Image (cartoon, rainbow, N blue to C red; front, side, top):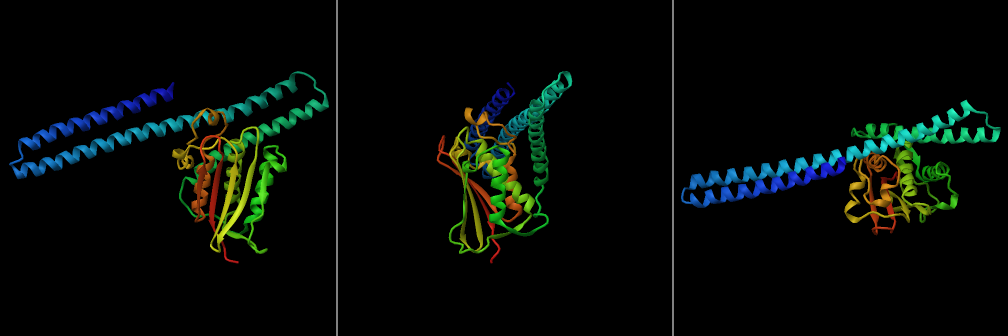
Length: 303
């Protein structure tokens, strides 16, 4: 209901802005035609006309952007509320069950395991929100050290498989070719880069649906750059949304994407971390149901 109301307001202000621009064009144009012989009046009339048009366009653009931003913010609040409420409700249910009746040892251990998983999910959501607040401030990477990039990616792949209870074959790790056994090193904060890589992997896994098939590879196009490619066979991304997915709170539209849990902060954090390390991140997709490739590019330390 709220999203529909905001879209109605957005359409209203857009139409209002167009009508005001049209009225300004008609009135000012008529005034210029009637006073075309008076050069001074004509000059000020043109300036006045341009000022009105510019003001109206800027005002309408600002209103539309604010409505869209509020819409994304509302979606974020709803997503975070769900991500926090669901595990808390689950943990409370298991605790009440343990308190009210006796359960055998096997079931008790199962309850403990499920509560630990819900706790991890809860902690992950909180960490995402806190990390988004941290990276919102433009700053250089903290604690920069030389990092074995291949080792960091391999470790992140194993951790992602463990988190999502996947078989190792679900995420294909491809050793970089053409390095002649040389070490691929980058400069930066290992914890932040691990967070960025895990966010990309988590995104690929979540949007793959039930059949997770993710390929992870490293490319070194030259001695100054290293590229991490993460490709999935999931729902894909429309071309007009490829750049928007890195904005704060933004989530891909569509029925399939709306069923995926998340806060809309993962790729925003990836972009902020990449920029803090002097790199960049971008997405490629063939469209609906054709999968997505996220590429993280970082400066490489010459070996």
